[in-house]
Length: 294
Image (cartoon, rainbow, N blue to C red; front, top):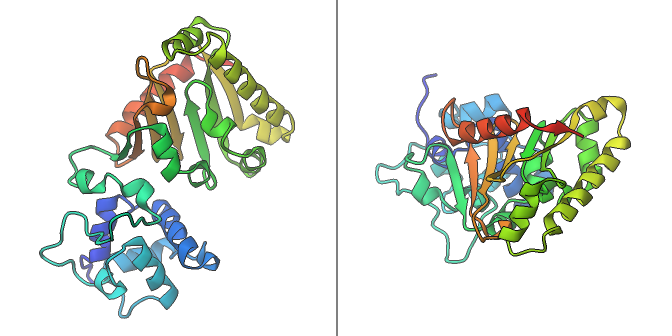
C-alpha cells in the first residue's frame, strides 16, 4: 500500500514528535489524564508508522483514539487519520483560553517555531522556574539511557530527582555524567558575587550536591559505579547543559547580575546532524575534556 500524508503525520512533524521515543513519552503524558492504566500502551514503532502513513483501514482501538484526542486537542480521531485539510492553520490547538494539554511543556513555542526557522529549538521559557513547571525531572530522566549534565551545582538532578530513582537508573544500565563547577575554585565565588549572593553560597551548595552523589555512588554495585561519572571543572560558567539520550538538550545561559532561576531556558530536540543540539553538545565535550574526575 502506498504511503499517504495524514493529518497525524503533519502534526507530529510540526511538534517534532516523529521519533518513536518522543511520541511514546507524549502518549504516556496524555494517557495519564485519560486513564492511568493506559500508560505504557503506546503503539509500537511499526504500528505508529502505519498510522502516520495512512496504512490503516479503520480507526485504532478506542483507547488509542481517546489518548490521541487529548494529545491533539481540537481534532477528532477520524480527522487525524485523514489527509490534512488544505487550510490547516499554523498550530491547530483550538483550546479555550487558559486550558492546557499534557504536551504543553514541549509545544508552548510551537506556533512560532513550527515554521522551521529556528533549527532544532523546540521551546523557549523565560526562566528556569517556568521551565520546571512544565518539564519535570521525572519526565526528562525516568526512561533515559544516557544523561550528561554540565553546570554549576546541578540541582536538577542532585536536589530535584530522588536518589532511589538515580540508583535504579544506574543499576539498570543508564550512564550518568555530572560536571560540577569546582567548589574550591575562584570561578564559583565570582559567580556568587555576580548573583549578589554570599561569596561561599554556591560553593557550599555544590559541595553538598557532590557529597550526595558520592554517597549514592558508594552504595552502587561495581558495574553501576562504572556508569556514574562525577567531575569538576574550573572555568567561567557560561551555560548549563543537560543532554539526554543524544536526542534532548536543555540549555540555560548564565547571565550577568541574574540568578540562574531567572535566566531563559531552551528546550532543544535534535533534528538530524546539525542544529543547536550539536552546538551545546560541543560545549559539553570541551568542558568534559578539561575536567577533573572525582
